[in-house]
Length: 161
Image 1 (cartoon, helix red, strand yellow):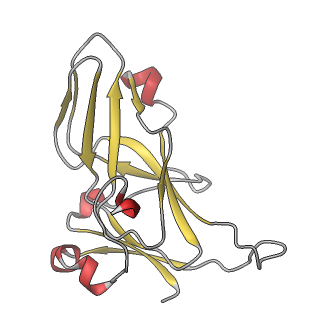
Image 2 (tube, rainbow, N blue to C red):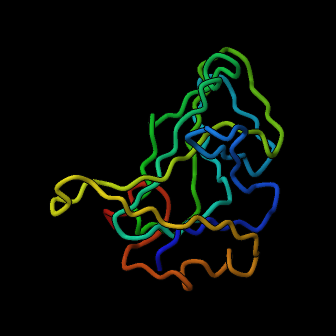
């Protein structure tokens, strides 16, 4: 398959770009959220992807995350391999002295799709896959079966299982 598929069960969770020249797609949180001071919280975006071989996704903090919200991504940048099929989780750390509260659908992180280095590619690639967003609860719940992978697919450190 030569397309990137982004699947969710909730139309409001579809990643979005707010301007035509934005590099990344904003990800939204899937639930109301409360994070205590000096606390790490892992939450799901309820996003799953199929990425063609030689493609990856990276999840970054939005630029306003530390200044506006007092949060940081605990792992700095999340790297999503092309064979990862489970939901995207983000690790948020509250470095303030206040309990922080966020409403469902708040945009806190952003993702980018890009190729990764392959030795046989001498000068990179001009291959750009099509991007498709799908809102389908049945597909979301069976995503790992529909887009199977040899990788054990669950959260952090899953390549070590």
